Every structure is written in C-alpha cells, then in structure tokens.
Image (cartoon, rainbow, N blue to C red; front, side):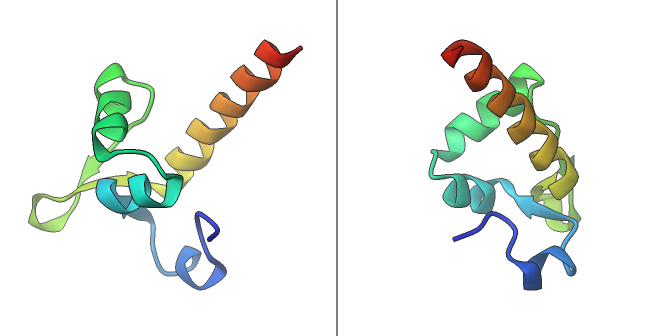
Length: 73
C-alpha cells in the first residue's frame, strides 16, 4: 500500500502517528522516538491527536533514503 494513496493525498494534510507507523511497518514507539529525537516533527490536531504532516513525512523519508544511499556506497 502506498504511503499516500492518490485519493488520500488531496484530502489529508497529515497522518496520525499510529496510522503513519502502520503504513511504514514500524511500531508506534519508533515514530514517537523519532519525534522526540527531533528527526520527525509532529503537530497536535483536533482532539489532542498527534499528527505528522505529509510534507514532513516526505522530507523525513528523503533524509533516511540519503543516509541509506551514503552508507551503501
């Protein structure tokens, strides 16, 4: 499943932490740790839910991809 399916990307500005973790296949605790380390930035949405903006997720994944490419070289 793509991280941001076409029908979702036009409607949503971000993803809840639990949804992001599920789509990336990592535990919620990992996402929260990345937020705490400052590698991923979240905002608080309505109802106190922690939201990660789609633009921030794309930036984060690009940084991780560069780190993997550099380590592989």
